[in-house]
Image (cartoon, rainbow, N blue to C red; front, side, top):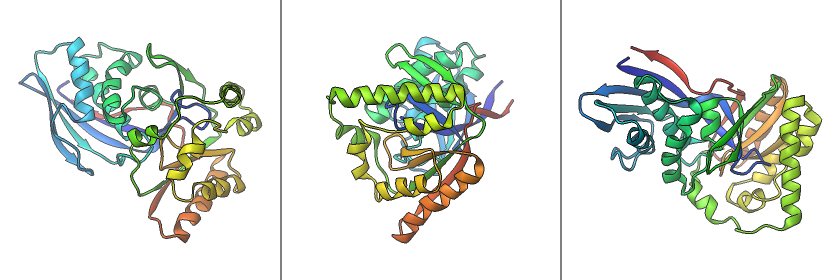
Length: 309
């Protein structure tokens, strides 16, 4: 294999009750990437479409992740990465994770797949850390492994794949403003009250249980964020109104996607998810904020190979 083309999907992290540990993978939104073997060793960034991103290999998330891989697995040849960036940086749906995970996945395939998808997380983390200012795998894990994932430990990258109820549908609304993760993390508190921490632990444990048992009522009671949302909500226009609209339209729960500004909702069934999308969109339309809305099944496959030769 000398070249490969892939689809690297967007993702939703935190999922209200699982800050920095819980995430799921989206289906219709993602970046297109093409990686080609080159004669010269190392990594180069080729064409970039869709967004204005750095071509310096030491400053681009994709190449930084690949360089981390090649440090552990040297190659006699190099790689050129072409990127069609369809996930806007700072959108809150895993833009940097898609770049980092997609790049190491593609290069691993061209190397003959020496690493498993779980093992690729360690290399993708190098790119994610550069982009967000913190090493966390809650976006990377669902992109590489698909479906819902739980990061038990970010330091050791102990990641658990969770079941995905077939009836569970995500709705994501993205106001076309940029909110960088590194800035959204800066406003968070280093300490939280014990009472709120206990409530958060309870919600996370219950939500994981609800995925296994497909208990949608339990899921509905669990999709609450006692720790992060109270601080970040103020950064997102009309957040409370959109969340209320989603719940009124029948969503099981709604919250900030990653660090924002995108907002997600989870619903039981496509019909409800579409109603939720319309209700969320109405809020931004009423105040003339340009936005995109996506209704998505949970992508249980993750990164997809489109073509290789």
